[in-house]
Length: 332
Length: 47
Image (cartoon, rainbow over all chains, first blue to last red; front, top):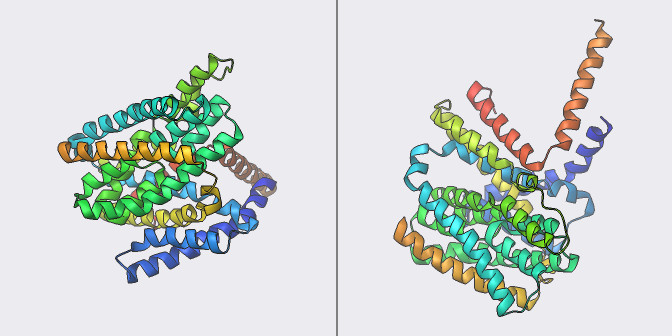
């Protein structure tokens, strides 16, 4: 009871910031359609944190932006039909699996042979770039008992590329004149963190946003398996965190909610008006979450990345995104 | 049961719900919130 009473006042200032900035972004976004509310939400956050910083009182509430993002993703399930999934779902899933497996093996190999990196930073960068950004770095860091310095470098590198791809991918999508679904799947296969992937997709179109998020979710679902694989590898050198329960522990549970909503929507329990209303709710949640995402992008954290990780992950991004681009153009 | 007893039980239920919610993994919280929003739409409760 006491916990319930003390937590809300702690969270409230940050949540108010997310809501106020989100409302401003949506109002400004309707006035500047070229940018749109989601890009403006991130922009407002990035400018604010790097010009004014964020007071300690608002941080607990701002940290809840991940919950809002995941809830928005769960709601996306309401606009998915089994037909749509059946038509291209298998191709998208196969491509996502190829990106995860191929990406991890490629980055591990290049990091060891070309850059001479140790196992720890290799594992963190491979999981962050191939599966789901910072959350994958933290999950694998826990599984292999990584050094604090390696974790900081890896997170700085991932955040740097999150920021770069947020700006570069919508421009690339325009230049390449890809269709909404093609662009979405391409972004979902290439980008690192879930928030920026969804933001990039929705910045281009509703269809691109949905496919970017769905494709990214397939990659995210591998985090448990990857953490277990790395834990098993580490076990050979003495660490023993290798329980099969680790897979479930690391699995992103909101995917269960997403799949449940897909099932509910396909049972026909939702009217078209309800689906539209759920879509609007998801849009608002994404706007609030993207304000928080922008507020996380402190240049000082990005500067923590070293040159070698940046070169390695940049090489990985270019290789994977070019291969993914060819694949979506041929297969979708 | 007395009014005080009923109030005590509901306080205890709310308290247990709060503790359960706090202990939940963030992913489960998102899943439940999403399902709650969808459920409210199915039942026609204005959201």
